[in-house]
Length: 264
Ligand SMILES: NC(=O)c1ccc[n+]([C@@H]2O[C@H](COP(=O)([O-])OP(=O)(O)OC[C@H]3O[C@@H](n4cnc5c(N)ncnc54)[C@H](O)[C@@H]3O)[C@@H](O)[C@H]2O)c1
Image 1 (cartoon, protein in one colour):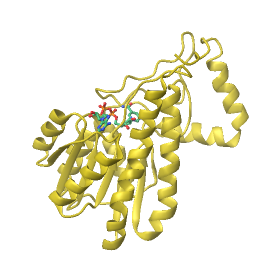
Image 2 (cartoon, rainbow, N blue to C red):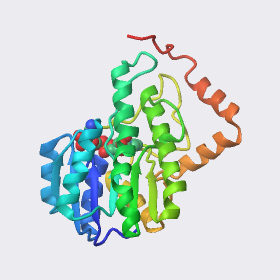
Image 3 (tube, protein in one colour):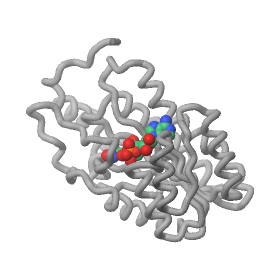
Image 4 (cartoon, rainbow, N blue to C red):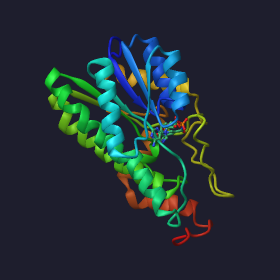
């Protein structure tokens, strides 16, 4: 996927990884970039810097996603690449309030489905297009990350894989960006439980620019899974090769932590 000359929408484009994408895609010659974000001031700031167009949008409701994509379509004529990137951190164990779990399902999963439903028919009609989903290594493997984040990111990965299988043969490319820890305003690296060793195979948190380097390499090859931290591939393979050993190993790591609470 060569982003030069393309019309691109980026949700969560006002900060962190989404902002990094807007800057990198602009530098690589994207024709038009729509920066869609809940934070209208940040969307405006980034849009101005990349000569793009800002849309304030809360992607946790279907009607907002539909309206945002219609406005982006009006502005650019058509959409070549839809980047579903907006995301939130937070939550705990079983005691996570249901409203937060639902919100994460809406932002991390449903918003991707709603966006694809709007843009894919036009892409197929025009003979091509691209979906880029920012998920997370937490969509592939569980660990210290809170329950609703891991659960919704796994669901998000499932949807992305479905898109890869069903849309790629129809000319719509799909990539899923699965970073581990990237230094952004919204995400603090998860802390391992007291006394537990952090997984040895993982590198320290990376910068947004490093994540963008990996993203551009992956997009150039139109790879389905883009892993900025390659160590995740080994952990993922180890899990697949012996799931019970993986569950045991991770369980041992958290054995001394307090049990997750009941409903709060
Ligand atoms: N930073 C990391 O370590 C890391 C690792 C793996 C995956 N991710 C994923 O990367 C994506 C971007 O995260 P980031 O680290 O850049 O965080 P960030 O907080 O810096 O940026 C997220 C952006 O999404 C926007 N957003 C939040 N809720 C929204 C909503 N309902 N509607 C529209 N916009 C909304 C925020 O306003 C913000 O501008 C997320 O999906 C996150 O889960 C981040």
